[in-house]
Amino acid sequence: MEVLDYHKLKIFKTVADTGSFSKAAQLLFLSQPTVTLQIKKIENYLGITLFKRDKKGVSLTEEGKTLYFYASKIIEDYLLMEEDLSQMKVNFKKNLVLGASTTVGEFFLPEVISDYLKKLPDVKIHLFIGNSKEIEEGILSRSFYIGVIEDEVSSNKLEVVGFFEDEIILVGANIDKIPDSVNIDDLEDFRFIFREKGSGTRNVVEKVLKKSGIEIKPFMEVGSSKAISKIVSGSDCVAFVSRLVVEDDLRYGKVKEIKIKGVKINRSFSFITQKNVRLPKMEREFLQFLLNNTAF
Image 1 (cartoon, one colour):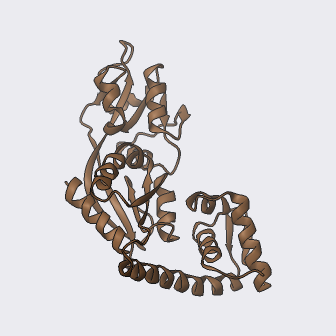
Image 2 (cartoon, rainbow, N blue to C red; image 1 turned 120 degrees about the horizontal axis):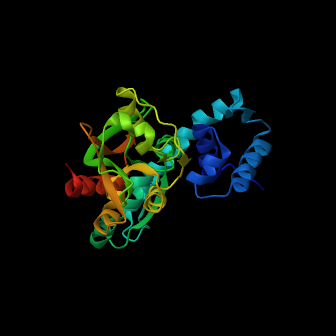
């Protein structure tokens, strides 16, 4: 006999918050058919339709909005119950789920997590890596409580605290054809590789260029900063990347930094949480560790 349990409600809420079955599946580490099946089971159990579909994605029906209201309260109460029980039971499983945008997740957080595990080796950490928009969606759907991003947020439901300053630089292959410095107006003469739309790095760069009246149409879009660096090292393309991404490639001469006269692009890495939501003890402790060990 089917029951309406926490697992199904969390899947339902994540689909509602992201407006997408595929994004919900990604955030929950499930396959899309599994998400679709669970939603169908809820609809069959309640005898209602939860979502309506259009070109923009999926949105809640009136019945779906009612379920969303109660599901949100149930999920919040369940998580609070779980935290209270964890403090009563010494051997309770310690799980920490984090979300991070690509540059932060691949080139900054791994060292932080390694240091954290030296202090608390019995904590099981799940790290979801996506672009900044996907991390926002993960926080709002409660797939995780803490997100670490390199971009501004679009939702006013999120608390944002900057804690580390990063620099974005322009890089090219270490060959004579690629200059060591350029004027900003010269950028339109190059073939650029950009990250995908929604990427924090891309958003920051495009805002800076727009202020100078520069609009670049990328020759190529690649979803990985490390892959971009490798392509750049063997081609005549150039790219904007975090200095963290290319530290080793710069050191070993695989790529070189191209200075842009009068331009320096800095941005803050920030952690984001949902406003008016009490963080579980494990998440609070990790945030304190993060601030104590990596702050400006």
